[in-house]
Image 1 (spheres, rainbow, N blue to C red):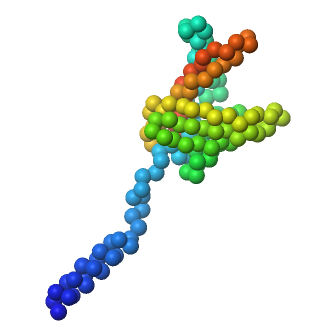
Image 2 (image 1 turned 180 degrees about the vertical axis):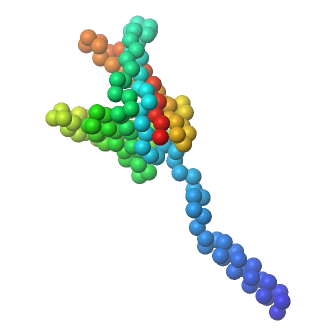
Image 3 (image 1 turned 45 degrees about the vertical axis):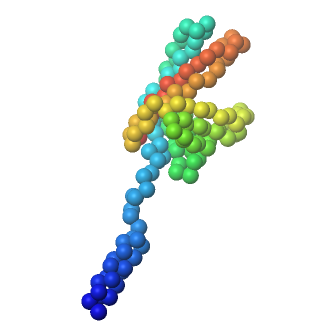
Length: 148
C-alpha cells in the first residue's frame, strides 16, 4: 500500500506539473512592439562612389509598429501606412499594402532588410534599394536605427 501511495503521489505531481502553464515560457519576438525612429539615413552611390547622404528630418515623430500577428504600421508626419512583416534569420521582409495616402495611390511593395542589431530596445537594419535621380537608377543604402 505504501508503494501504491508513493506511485499515486508521483503520478499526481507529474500531472500537476505538466498541466501548469508556464507564463512567459515561450520567448516573444523582440521585434514586436512600437519603435521610434532615431535615425534613417540614405546613402546614394553614383559610379560606385558615395555621392549623397540624406538624413531623415522627421526623426522622433516617425513610428513603426510591429504586431505579433505579422502585421504592422508606419506613421510618418501623422500619415500612416500598413504592412505585413516576417523575420527569417537576419532578414526582415516587409510587404506594404497597396493604399491611397493623402490622395496618392501607392502600389504594394516588398522590401528586404538586413538586421544588424535586434535587442529588446534597439533595432538597426539596412535596406539596399535603387533610387531614381535625374531619371537615372542609382544604388541606395538606408541605415535605420529604432528604439522602443
